Amino acid sequence: MNVLRSSVIYSFFTALSRIFGFLRDILIANFLGTGVTADIFFVAFRLPNTFRRIFSEGALNSAFVPIYTKLIKNNSKQDSKKFSGSIFLIFLIASSLFVLIIEIFMPFFLAILAPGFISDNDKFTELVRVSRIIFPFLILISVSSIFSSILNSHNKFALSAALPIILNITLIIALVVAAYTRADFLIFLSWSVIIAGLLQILILTVTLIREKIYVIFSLKIYTNYIHRFTKLFAASFFSSGLLQINILIGTIIASYESGAISYLYYADRIYQLPLALIGIAIGIALLPSISSKIKSNSLATIHQSIEQTLIYSLLFAIPASFGVYALAEQIIAVLFERGEFDDKSSLFTANALKFYALGLVAFIIMKIYTPIFFAYENAKPTLYIAAVNLAINTILSIILFFYIGFVGIPIATSVSAWISVILMNYYLKSHNYYQTSNKIVFPTTIIIIVSLVMYLYLSVLKNYSGIFFNMLKDHEIIFLLFSVLSSILLYFILISFYKPFKYSEIKKILQNE
Image (cartoon, rainbow, N blue to C red; front, side, top):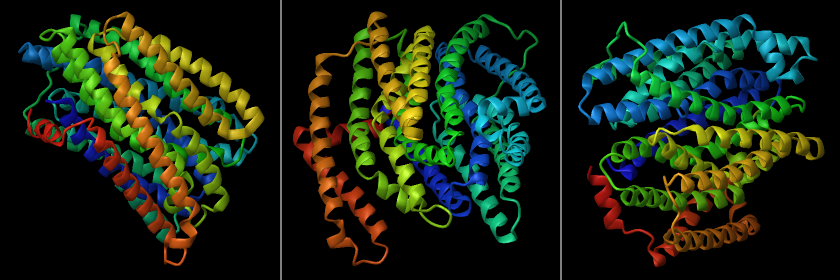
């Protein structure tokens, strides 16, 4: 299946999922704001959510798909079933033991993760209680991730992208019920996470059975394929884990400033949308594609495929970065500013979002570059790069937090992301996995120039928005919608003069395998 076609499918269902996610966050902002209750839930929810990113979008998928895809391509169906069965058992046992240990030592673990909470005994006690309810979600994530990776290997991306919809709908129901029954928000939200995880596994299981995709459990678990998987997974787990530790470090530092965890959470939610629609979607679709081509195609063909994918990504990533930066205040105000989420919350969250936007293109490029290493079953460079990223991000976050507060955290995150892109380029070139050619320079330059024109248009529009929109009811929403739609139209009108793509070519790609 073509990478672009696969990524469009993944992006569509991811977009649908994120719509429900924004509705969930709007309700959380309305009922909880950026106060103590919100901070407690976000810290507790970040624990399993961090591992979700490591497993489903990181280590497991990156290590599993190349080997499983090659087994399918070589018509080794029996070996592929045994391989997936062994991975299932290993992860079920390992995640259960890990959850048990963390549950026992949860207070010590949280003292490290959120040291700023320790001074308030009631706040910390509540955090421990909520975290113990939510953390077993990690076991459910492990199972879901394995099933999703199997479907991805068979070029079935829709369900894995749509799975978060179940979690978001469950959380929305919990929020609404808790609000109208005046129940404990934290308890309702916590148990809804577990219920959502069980529903996800049920739907995935039914789908695998319907597609006649099965796993076989064998007494001989450790095979040559598991050995190859272990090497890939170890490097991927640590590299993905190190990147997620960046987020946890941000949480640790932000816990010393009241409300900062919530500001960063809401800002993170916004910039994660284009990251998921472009970077994660293309990265997940690219991995099985390159893995299947390595033995049967020339390096020139593979390089051309990667370069085409990168250009299409930049075509959307660069204007998205400019647009999010220009409209940060309006986006946050329209989505979240109501109820307990006041003007101050909007201002601080928008500031964080702007600095995340500066690193958005780098985050997306990283998501595209990373699968290339795993397709060649060489994950060590990603581990080295992640270690450098962690060191730079940690040092910068601490220094900047000391001088300018919580906004130093997204600044450090963006700077370290760009440094990681530079290092990835170096490693890809040195291993001859992919080398950026001169063909990419001109289209990238055109995309940047057109995106800059779009940004200037949005800046002018913001300055004169009061004249045209303040007289209208709900003028903030109307202004944001007009700004987004008109800027997208302007961008594609201008970029069409250069013609970095042909509409007939895209149509052909989307219709054919």
